Amino acid sequence: MDVLYFAWVRERIGLPREQVQTNAATVADLVAELRAREDRYDMAFSDLSSLRVAVDQELADFDAPLAGVREVAFFPPMTGG
Amino acid sequence: MHVSVQEGPFDLGDVSSEFASGHKDMGAIVTFTGIVRDLPGDPLQAMEIEHYPGMTESALKSMAQTAIDRFSLGDALVIHRYGRLVPGEMIMMVATAARHRKDAFEAAEFLMDYLKSRAPFWKREITASGAEWVESKDEDEDALARW
Image 1 (cartoon, rainbow over the protein chains, first blue to last red):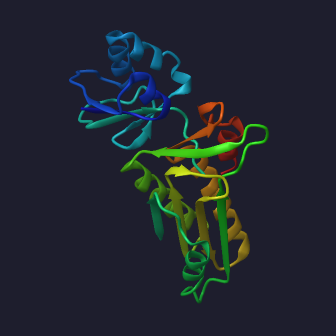
Image 2 (cartoon, rainbow over the protein chains, first blue to last red):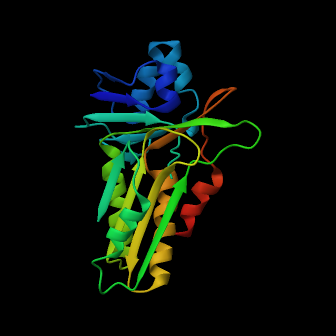
Image 3 (cartoon, chains in turn green, red):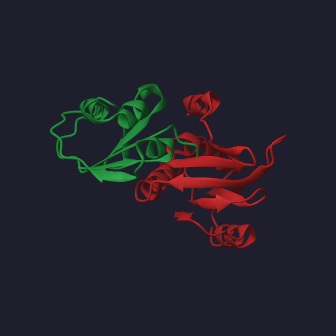
């Protein structure tokens, strides 16, 4: 699936998007897989309360299932308006 | 409904006039415009706005449709810019058309409250001392409880 990062999440991880091969059942499982990769991921995901997630471009919770999902995005709380 | 996510500026007068015409059965039009505000003490050189192409438009359309249904609007408009803006520039606007003013005002506030914390935009302030991501405010999240 495609994994996208925005704002300071993108800066900490160092890229805006990547393809990830995963069998993660939920967003939280995917986060655990990413954190295990490298320090920059571990740091970016260290405080989930300061992160938001969208699954196939809809806001979702970290326990959202990933079966059939094509795109997951991680970002800080939004500051529109 | 009109939703636009754009880098370039918009003409408030032209957009407002066009929106206000052609709604003979709507007695009230409310528009709100957001401006890039300078910072006290540490002058703002620019505001950079990042967004999530694809999700942004669908999120704004969904908010506008919810406002139309909930407040019985005749029409709703949302324009939001991204990219690099300087103080004084218009960032965004909403416009609502309703039969009576209460619905038009409330729908505009509803749209603004949702845009603040549910539309995928992220602001970064550039000053002489560096670049800082704008943090979301608890009061913006709390504002949603009203609806």
